[in-house]
Image (cartoon, rainbow, N blue to C red; front, side):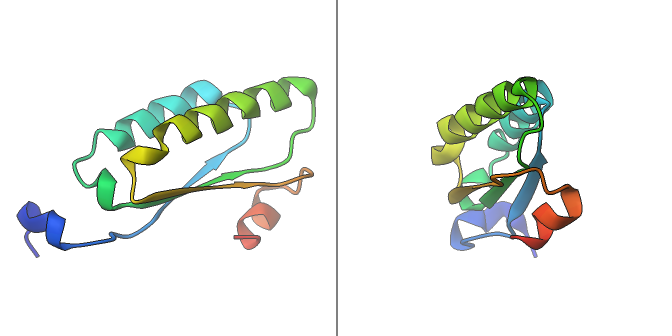
Length: 95
């Protein structure tokens, strides 16, 4: 399949981003994804596990804010925020 007619394809395969407490890495990754010409056809799911400390909570607020600010760049963007810290495996099962 040639991708020169991406506008005819909607939506493309979804992207799942796992986040916890590294807002700088998350921002860098999401910004790179925004630069992809197919981003506007791509649904994105951001999964954030529950925080364990105030520092985690602060980082997660930055992650949440940046994800919301980029939402218009994608076909859709859904943020799944766990209320408590479940660990990666249980967070993913909750999708």
